[in-house]
Length: 445
Image (cartoon, rainbow, N blue to C red; front, top):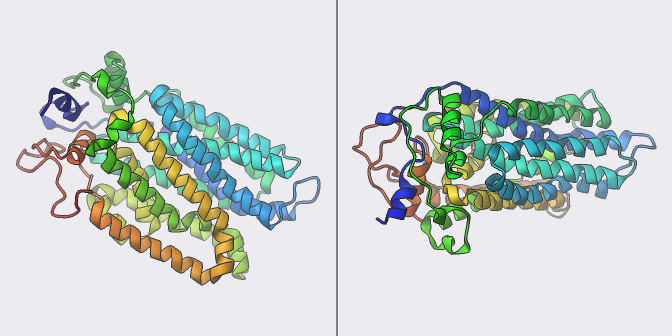
């Protein structure tokens, strides 16, 4: 093993004697970051009640026909795809905390444009801006949370990203039950403003600070998050590990996570769930439900309950089991975002997560924009059978290629993809087992 490899494989943050930290402020910091996903969940859910509301609205409110309504729902995903690229650049340049603070601006600006909209183009422009913010938040929040959490709670806290997304969707559905589109957009400004306020008091992640050679700031962040900074050590981060270069794609520690991350994001969207979330009320109207708004709220409530269940069992059941056996809210909703934040080495995390988020939102655009056309061509039952087939392919891919990451440090996960299996302590466990094993399951790519 070369000295460079040794630098890369040692944990950036490790407690003396393998003991795990027990600070509680890490939960507060995770909540503050998760307000970003709450905001973009509201954006995703906004179109479901807003589209029928805009169709009922009298002039001078903009009017939505069928084609305009599909663009109103889908254009968010184009903005989010661009936000994923921007977020991948920001997260490495500006840091995790500042990136979260900055994404509050397009959230509020986008809803402000929607409130002031006098025509369709203003509506679409506002949705595009909120989509840009969604893309940044969907990338930065999982990275921030995974880097402040210790292995014992990383699954719980990482799953809270998706929990806050579906909570935001449910909030939009509930508020849309009583509010018209303009007031609903005003309500959408509240979560990002709250995030801006709370995140100001949270620290940058210790891993990012160490990568910037800011050891004193990193120690202070550890003290805040975990209650103690004594005894924690970090290796020097070599200049050769700063930034992403195309040649690094030859390394298994980079290209294997790339394939897994991109594939999971694609399969998540091909399940068709965003089409259901964006157009829930319209779908129930076409299905002749007496109260389509109530049906949409019930869907949102089910999402919240089962995603909360996933958060509670994530660190016990593991990622692979839930991806294989569950439905969307328990497995394919939260886990691709969690794995995206876990599997990439620190020096390529910004670019790699940006590519994953770009993939996710581009696929979301295709699915949401063409969902109505698919239902016309294949009939509704055919469209949903097609989504079921992609779900099956996603399970097969998981069984073949996705490793288990529960209880592992981020550095041990990198070791696995690089093919290094030296015994490292896992969450205070004895050194008898390999640092990162599949337990007899999964395979190298």
